[in-house]
Every structure is written in C-alpha cells, then in structure tokens.
Image (cartoon, rainbow, N blue to C red; front, side, top):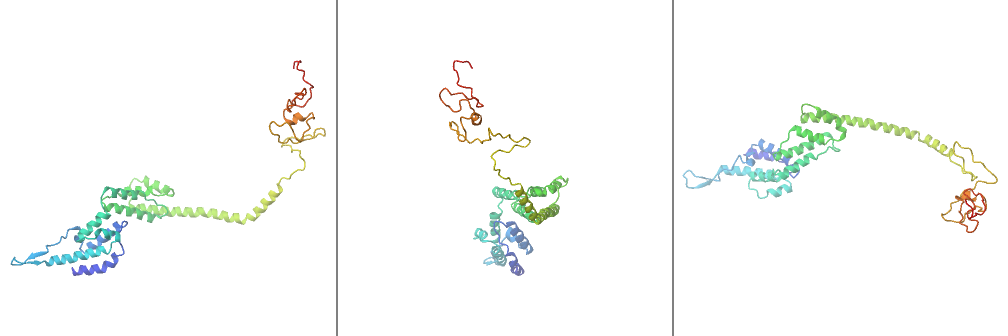
Length: 329
C-alpha cells in the first residue's frame, strides 16, 4: 500500500491537468482507467475489491478488535477518492459531494456524464451525424469524428468502421467529390487508417490545384495594371473622337440607307411641338396655311370651328369649299 501511495503522489501532477466536464468524459475515463489499472487499484472503483469487515473478534472470541485490513483498505480507498476529486471540474465535483467511497464516487460520475439513457444516446448520435469538415483540415475533422464515436462507446453504443466511413464522407465538401466516388466504389470497405491516408492525399491535391488556379488571375491582374495607362489613353481619345456634335440646323438627319430630306423654300421643315389633347390652338403654325392640317394631324374638323367653314379642309389641308348639305357626297 505504501508503494501505491508514492505512485499516486508521482502521477498526481500528470492527471490533474485534465479536469472532467461535460465535453471530455471519454478522455478523462481513458486516462483514469489506465492509471488505476497500472497501480492495481481499479478494483476499488468497479467493486471487485470490496471493503473487508471493520472489526474482527479476538482469539478468545470475546472482544472485537479493529481489522488491520480494513484500515489499509480504507486508507487506499480515500486516497483514490482524493485523487479523483483533484481531476474534477466544479460541475463534476458538485455531483460527487457526499460520496463515501471511490466506488460510489465513480458510479455517480458515470451516471452524470455517461448515462445510457435514450435521450443521451440520441443527442450523441445527432452530434456525430451533424459534424462537417468546414474550414478544418482532414486530421482535425477526423479527430472530431473519433471523439464523438468514443462518447457513444462510453454509453454502450459501438459503431462499425463502415458506419463511420459513411459519416465522414457525408461531412466532406464538394471539392472531395472525386475521392468520395473512389472510396464508395471499392468492393472492400477501408479501415479508418486507410481512409485518413486517402483523404489527406486528396487534401494535398486540392490545395495544389487551388494554388495553381489562383496564380493565373494574379498574373492577369499584373498585366492589366501594367497596360492600364495606354488603355486609358486610347479610351479617352476614342470617346473624344466619337462625341456627337450638336448641329445648328433643326433639320433631322436622314436614317442610314435613305436620301436626305428634300428642302423647299415654300414649305420649310418645321418641328411639331407637343400639343395637349383637345387643344384648339397650335403655337408655331399658321392655321390659314394649306399645310396646317397635314402637320397638325387630322385636318378634317380639327379646329372645331363652328359655322359654314366646318369641314372645309380634308386630311391633307386641301380646301374643297363650303359643304352643301343638300348635295350627296
């Protein structure tokens, strides 16, 4: 027992750097089981090393005395309780306060952090299925997958490597589509070690391709910057040369493929101003002119002038004289 107590003091500083909380129970459990088994003390927490009777009867059978085995067992058990308490976070410590033995303390911790109930198992499975690679590298991504798998094993749920492979491939981005097809096409499912090797090789290839593709736009950018003054000069001169000039003449230009509009001194070109609907005055036009009806739109009854002159102008401004209502049209 003395040698075990010395080993506890030597390994205490190593174990105390991992404090048990809601996120690291599998890691904590692995380290504590390995340490207690190495010190031949795991029976104190799993119940295989029970407490001996506290009192034994004397040789004459009349006076009970305190058992030396009980004292030694109790000393060792409380040392383990102290060791476990030094590796607990405040959250974990709150659930073991009042434990009378290392076995009771161990059972309370397992009940809190690895309860094999349906809700806990469903939550752990959901956490595993929702893992994505994202911005992590392959090694970090696979470490997260393994941590979730270990958490399920602590509650009694064991997954095959093939199920883990499916989960890993589902969480990979589209850049890994080629290697995903290769892995799925294999007739024999690969192990986790082989999967890690294939994915890390594919990650290196993807990084190299992305690096080579990003170098081309950079070269094009440098070339564009070096030629930008000349391009700016050409664009400036071109825009200056093609700037349209405003003509002093009000005559519109002929469309492409047509002859210029004929000019006449008797009927010069006059632009048609905007005329509101229903208006009876036409600024800029001589209503007595024979062409007024032509430029105004519809010469027949356009001016709404009452009297015998109504309807004297047809659509082309010709004067047919007063209408004789008794004469057939």
